[in-house]
Image 1 (cartoon, rainbow, N blue to C red):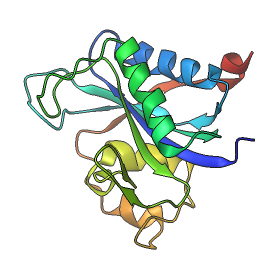
Image 2 (tube, rainbow, N blue to C red; image 1 turned 135 degrees about the vertical axis):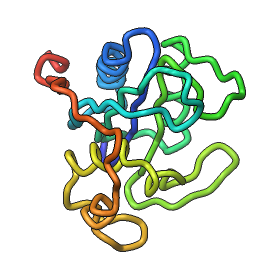
Image 3 (cartoon, rainbow, N blue to C red; image 1 turned 90 degrees about the vertical axis):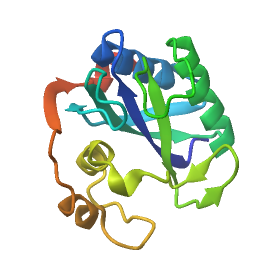
Image 4 (cartoon, helix red, strand yellow; image 1 turned 180 degrees about the vertical axis):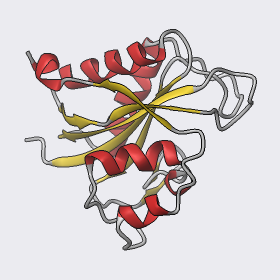
Length: 172
């Protein structure tokens, strides 16, 4: 039974970023222990790291799963590798696919491999705005409404794209 709710941030700035994200969502949805419940629009954002790289395309999806957080992380990282992700040690460098486990139910954990909720949510409008789009009533780890966090975003450099993933066609 898939009763755990997780939110995953998706990002790409190489090799047709929008298509990378759409393909990753289809593959996640096809996993027998994952059901994608919905996804935000795609958003274009300036890179956090080195500025000599293309803009990112980002989204956030909500899924249900019967996997543990670490098992889900393993699936996400395997998908990144399948899409050509190379971990070259450059923090916030260009990538074909980045899948971040943002939240898993209301779980708080910190291990060598995984911190939940994701440590960078509060500083990332390219995560907060798409997350708000699909879960506007979400209460964050500090007890505040997600809308309060979003109201503090600068939104500079964030642009919603026309693309939205049609999950009816994915499930078919």
